[in-house]
Each structure stands twice: as structure tokens, then as C-alpha cells.
Image: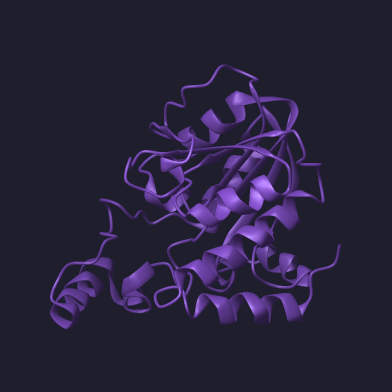
Length: 235
């Protein structure tokens, strides 16, 4: 499937209402995740472990596709966990080796202090031939500071202080505490170096397909990728 500019425009329009209409935004993102995964595997009757699940819209989209959806998050208060979910750390998944068909993880990597170890753990629980869908927002992207963006380009701590002055409370995502400075290179290096998985795709998640060539340009890729998507098959 070729993803063109039309899809990118639709996703960025939805992105603009993340704060005001989160159900609309996360619903669109969840449907896009399902469509992307279905390019590599059928989801019907497959066990899908969503690591860092969060919004309930992902549960709705995956179950509508026929998947046996298992949401996992470290926070027991998130919506997905309330519905047949698991409370656990992404760094120590409570599943046996080779026990799930698909691992989906969207925008978790930037929130864990040791992302490579978390990615290794995701591959561990996949059966041979199973798929890992891993996407994350890198630090130098326009949204790398999350709610403090784009001021994080002037420094994460400075951006947090500016946000607190403006909003009257600190940001939810505090740099080096709950938000970490991950790079595009970090994800590419991990994917290229792991012996447990075969890389099927590496590209900017929200951009048209030809933008995958941007990943060949160090420096530029850190700014324009926005969100890196990695798809690996378990060996």
C-alpha cells in the first residue's frame, strides 16, 4: 500500500484536536495503526499485546478487527486497562517467551529511561514470525517536547518552566523524568543491531512513503521525521 500526502494531511488535522477532542484524535490514530499492521499480518484471532496502551480507542479498533487485544500499562488509571487490561512495567512484561502474535507500542519509547531494553522485551514475548509495531516521537521533532513543544528546542528545562508560568502547573511530561531525549538514530541502531528480529519497515510514521529516504540523512532526519515507525518480524 502506498501512503500519500492525503493520509498525512488527515492525520495532522486530527493531531490539531488532540487536546480538545482526544476521542477523535486517538480514534483516527488507532484505525491507522490497524491498517498499517494489516499490511503485514491478519489480526483476526491473533493475540495483540499493546504495550503502553492508554486510550480506549485502540482497544475498540483492534477488537473491531477481530484481534484478541490485551492492553498493558504501568498506570492502573488509564482507560484501556479498565477493560481486560494488565498493569505492569514495559521493562518486565508478565508474559512467557513466544506467547503473543503481535506487539503494538505507540508513543511509549520516549517515556521509558531504557528504551532498547524495553524493545528487547517486546521481541522476547513474540512468537517466531510474530510482528512488532513500534513507533515513537523523537526528541528533536517538532512535537518532541510534547505539550511544551516547540520550546523544547531551546532546552527541555526551560520549556517546562515556560509552560508552568503560562499554565499555572508543571507539564505532565517532564524531561529526563517522564520524557526522555530519544533520537531517530537510537531506534535505527537498535533495529539494525538486534538479532532477534528482522526489520520489515523503517520510516516516518505520519509522512508519505517517499519520506523514508529522509532517514538516510543524519541531522535532518532528527528534525523532520516527527515520529519513527519500526516494524520487525520475530526470527
